Image (tube, rainbow, N blue to C red; front, side, top):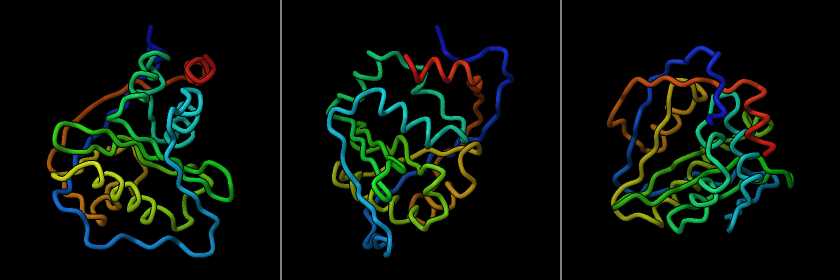
Amino acid sequence: MSVADDTNKRLQAVVTRLQMEHEPARYPPMPLGQHLALMRVDNIPTHFYRYLYDRVGRDWHWTAALQLSDSELEQRLSSEANDVQVLYLDGAPSGFFELRDEDDSCRLVHFGLMKHAIGRGLSGWFLGCAIRAAWSRSKSRVTVETCTLDHPAALPLYQRAGFMPVERRDESLIPLSEEARRRALYR
């Protein structure tokens, strides 16, 4: 059974697929004056992943990972093809990115900051960290998707970092009700 609430109306979005075919020559420097740590998470517990996913993606209608069963999510997260790294700001989780190897490329599956970290000048540096990690896994290209439901700065940020749009498509999704979200988070 899906945790989506079928009584909600569908949201329409334009999805843009972007790719980068050459590693950047330079990456943005770490912002000064902030207590930051970026840590790769080995064997991430599903409850912690769902917490990160929800806190980063709630305002942007991220729902897919919340609709996976524990076993489906555990299988994905435990795969050697998957890499999750968490950003900490002042000791608290503040964002994450997820990478996945796909054939001859690496996909930036999820990337984002939590509300308390937005507007602090972290996004360019943090995206640079994700891109560097992706290029360490791929020698041909790095891909990412964003949509019109994501933060309005997402597409321009990806393009400033060197990603080029290669495809656009229309999609729709059924948003999660608060009850369905609670069921997904507190299994």
